[in-house]
Image 1 (cartoon, rainbow, N blue to C red):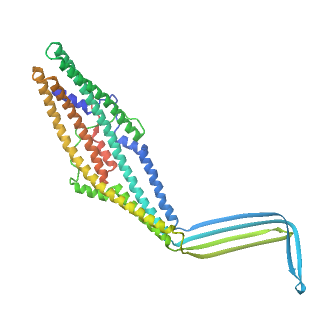
Image 2: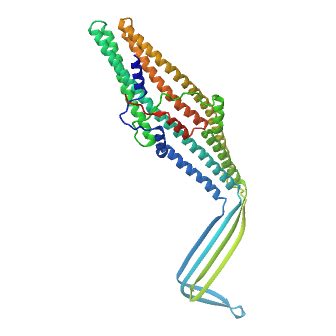
Image 3: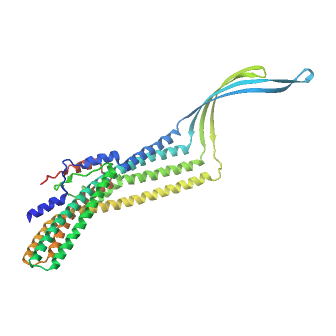
Length: 458
C-alpha cells in the first residue's frame, strides 16, 4: 500500500508529459507583458492621459500665429469724383479703364496670458490626471502579475484534478473487477457489483469533465500571452508555505492605505476634480493677456490707367483685460456641476478606501486559512490512506462491504485534490494580498519561478 500511496501522489501532482521542455512562469509572464491586450490597452490609455498635462501647460505658454494673404484684382470699371475748382465750383471727373492690382499682407502675432486662473487650474487638473494615469497603469501591471499567476496555477490545478480523476477511475475500475470476481465465485451479492459499477461510472464522468476544465484553463493562458501552451513547469513539493511577513493584519492594512495603486488613483481622481471645479469657478474671474503684432502690407497695380504702389509696416503692442459679466448663467452652472463631480469623486475615493481595507483583511485571513488548510490536508492524506488500507483489509475478510471501500477511496482522492488546491490557493491569495498592499512586483514572479521544476518520469 505504501507503493500505491507514492504512485497516487506522483500521479496527482500533475500529468506526466512526453515533452522535455516546459514553459516556466517567468516565460509566460514575459510573453504576457508583450502580448496581453488588457495591459497594452492600459499602456495606451496611460500615454494618452499624459498628453492632457502637456495640453494644459501649452495654454500657459506664448501663442504665436503667422498669416499671409495674397489678393489679385482684375477687371474693368468706372470711377466718378468731384473736384473743387475756382470759386468753389464743383468739377466732375469721370474715368474708366482696366483694374489690375496686387495686394500682399504678412502678419505675425504673439499672445501671452498674464493672468488666467481658468487656464492655471486646468493645467493643475491635467498634471494630477498624469499622476492618476501612472497609478492606474501601475495597478494594471500588478493586475497582470496576478492574472498570470492565477491562470498558470489554474492549469496546474486542472492537471492535478485530471490526474486525480484518472487515478481514481483506474482504482475504481480495478475495484469493479475485483468485485465482479468475488461475485463470480459467490462471495458477495450482485448489489456490491452494482455499487462498484455506479462508482466507476461516476469517475468516468468526472474524468471527462476534468479534461474539459484543463482545456479551458489552457485557453485562459492563451488569451493572456497570445500563444498556445501545453506543458508547464510544476510546483515543487518543497515549496514553503509560510505566514506572510509582516504577520499582523493591521500592518498589511497600513501598507494598503499607503501604497495601494487603485486607492492612489482614486485620490488623484478626487484632486483632479477639485482642480477642475476651481477652474470652472475661475470662469467668473477677469483675464489679462499681452499681445504683440507685426504686419507688412504691400499694394501695387494699375487702376483706371493710374499706377500706384504702397507699402507699410506696423508693429503694435497691447494689453487686453477681459471681465466676464453675464453669459446667461452658463459659468455658474458649470461651477456647480464641477463641484458636484468633485463630491462624487471624493465619495468614490472613500468607498474604494473602505473596500481596500476590507479586501486586505479578508485576503490576509484567506492566506492564513490556506496555510492551515495545506497542513490539514497533508495530514488528511496519511489518515485517508490508513482508512483505505483498513477498509480494504476488512473487505477482504468480510467485515466491511464494497460501499465502505469506495467511500474510503473517494475520501483519499478528495484529500489529494484538496491538498494540491490549497497550495495553489495559497500562492494566488498571497499575490493578491501583496497587490492590495501595493508591494507586488515582477520579482515575486521570478522568486516563485525558482520553486517550479520538472518531474522525472518513472
